[in-house]
Amino acid sequence: MTAKNGNYICIIMRAIIQRVSHASVTIQQKEKAAIKEGLLVFIGIENEDTDEDITWLSNKIINLRIFDDENKIPNVSLKEMGGNLLLISQFTLHASTKKGNRPSYIRASKSGIAMPVYEKMIMQLEKDLGKKIYTGEFGADMKVSLLNDGPVTIWIDTKERQ
Image (cartoon, rainbow, N blue to C red; front, side, top):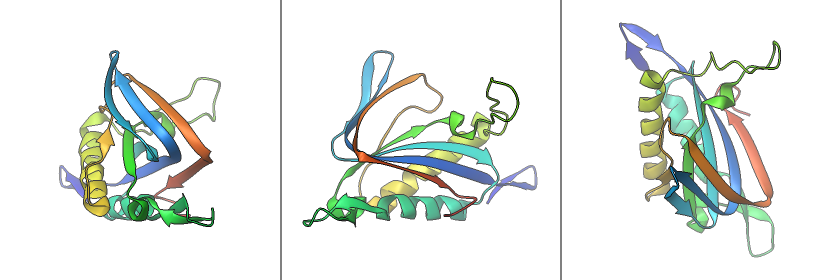
């Protein structure tokens, strides 16, 4: 759990996981990172969760059996197949659309809280995957390109753990 001023702050993370044939992120017309077969993960952070959730979410992401085995059955994880991972921070995953037509992002963590959690998530994913992952740049205006394979897109919320 993250302590701030003697109080505990919890973080809820939401992740959109896409199985991709390739993906890349460009910042100011320069490619920052690119992967071939693997996962593109968008992650949004909100004040509500614990460090345990970073571990849980990382483990869930790299062990999801969503890649095809030799029989064309999705039965292989990212870790098992040796694929790559591109992680992109995206505060808009916590948009509230209950009132009006302009989304509210008030529930998304401020950068002072979200950035250290994002950095912990990177370290946990690298530890669990056993290799470097690729990232965008926290808070930057990013252009993300991908070829969704399947398509396979999965949404995970650490609060619901479904």
